[in-house]
Length: 197
View 1 (cartoon, one colour):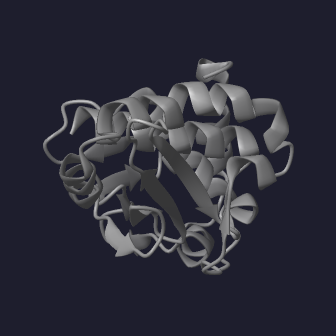
View 2: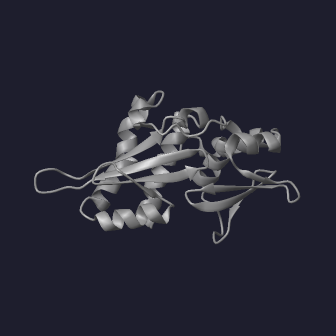
View 3: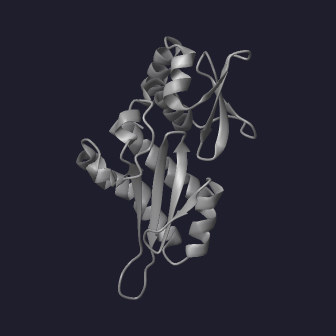
């Protein structure tokens, strides 16, 4: 992630200036006023964020850097709009063409290599992240990345003639919640989590 330290520090700085009630309303996070924490589901796991911007998750000693940065960026910039149920490729995101090749290299191609001939493993990895089946490709799943920001991951299996391919799609509402650079990280994190599962 470019300027990783800056991205997280900037997100914390901005987050501390916001009204918790406003953040909860826009993001779909659950604000527990008595404890001064937000509860937010990210890739199927509940994360807790305190008012200082510290992010924790039960069962994790430390929330990975990219994850806590994305969570805070989402809390800061979520528009409040619900998902639209229409999917965009990374190329269709604002300035997506600039990051399209690295997105393929870092997210889609590793998934195709790993799951191209193993639909059952693809299904297990998607379901482990809270995925629900979609009628797309040979196997497709909608993944609840963030409360108002689902992703879709779609597999076309390979055979002797054609290589397998995987596509990660973003709900059309995505650009109202996060920048294209942050959505790039979100898509790569989806791939990493499926490959690790």
